[in-house]
Length: 253
Image 1 (cartoon, helix red, strand yellow):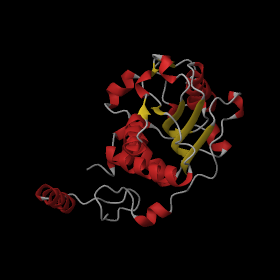
Image 2 (cartoon, one colour):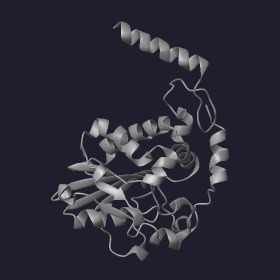
Image 3 (cartoon, rainbow, N blue to C red):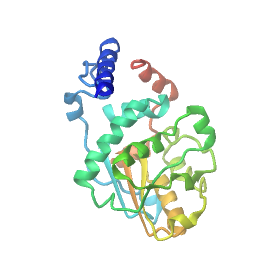
């Protein structure tokens, strides 16, 4: 009881000294762990439809795919903070929102045996010291309580960042860049594959094929956001490293 009161008191003190503000409108937030005020949260664009694989990639290897938001505006900015500046608080926020939506709207998606995050190459991990997709999985799995088999999926080629590639390069980029370690663990398993953004579906499809080839029988894909408009999928993301840095500087603690 005493420790609980002490913790609440410390959190209150931190909130007074370092008040949390909305990442979109800069309104002061009531709760330190929130990233958006209620007004801005209600303005987030919900995903218009289930993400679809672009036709240029041919056969779809996953069963279902769902996203919460359209990759635009506030959610796009939040994801950039999260990925490129390692703001773990945003990961916690997005992971908890993901669980709310999955349990309310996509229960079939999470009726699986195990969960896997899209892996990061070890050199990229050394750069960021943070695996954003796996951190999402860890937050989500506090509620889902699935077997986390992320460690068996490896990014063995350090490909260019998808965000800075044009459409054709995005399609080629994930090809042959992943491998499965100890593939027998996936035999006769259904899997939830988790990432932050679904654009063309190239990464999800490449990994799904590898998992199916390793014996998995069903792959469901879940991302925080997706790009639904074909015109948006075909253009470069348009976010340079300098732009990401400038955006992030506005919210540096």
